Length: 204
Image 1 (tube, helix red, strand yellow):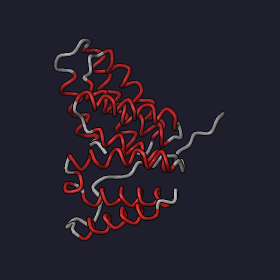
Image 2 (cartoon, one colour):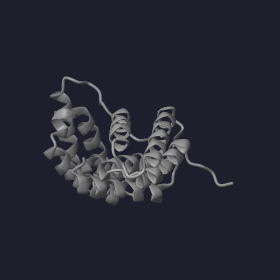
Image 3 (cartoon, helix red, strand yellow):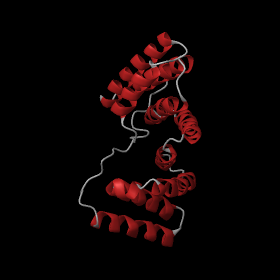
Image 4 (cartoon, helix red, strand yellow):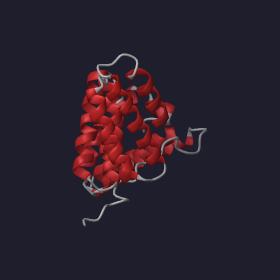
């Protein structure tokens, strides 16, 4: 996933350095920092609220597409954790499209969309996102930079393939994951998987 600390730092420095509305820019930065703190504390409900407010202020504050991509990405993740799945998918697609326009890492949003659909047991949709994400990630050298994280993704992709009866493809993905783990000096993933659907909010 995108580094929250890096995202907030870049957002704060770049957005306030020459924007259309510095008051909105500063407010957006404050909300983004609050969202990151809530998220790190496991309070995804408030994180979602703060990311939403950060996006609104960032739009008025002259944020770049790349900055808005980060905010929508995190808002989408938070929405998915609290089971607002439709909003999560919408925001992650927005993040992907913004990254496409600004040269950002589009594969990150695609992998999140794959996770989001997998956790809803929407395996064909999950597979579709995985199959869009892996080639882009490979172009960026993701398997070399984060082999264990890539292996984890391949394992999930393999399980999704098994669920739709694509046994040989599932075995190929699982085999590649095994090879990546064998060749990696790092025995753990450097990223955490988003816990989609783990903090559903009950209706009043």
